[in-house]
Length: 71
View 1 (spheres, rainbow, N blue to C red):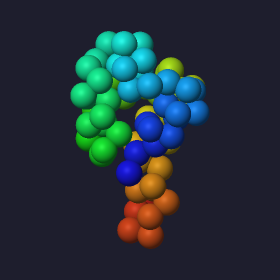
View 2: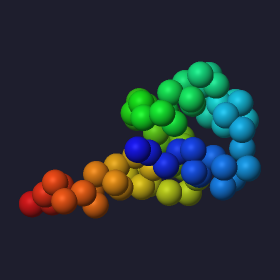
View 3: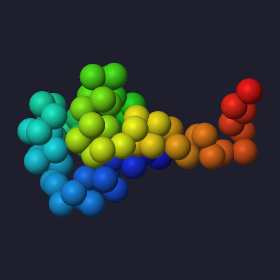
């Protein structure tokens, strides 16, 4: 699962606030928080807003998984 909801709450933003900041719908934010992977432009906006990386937001759990092979 991604960390968008955790970061949004850390920054004290509602889904509506976040959607207005990055220029998408509130429903799209909800979908992202439930596991949808956004397009690159939206992912970049989220990472920049939250001062983190796309990997941290969406893929860190995968990288830490015993099934991930970094070779």
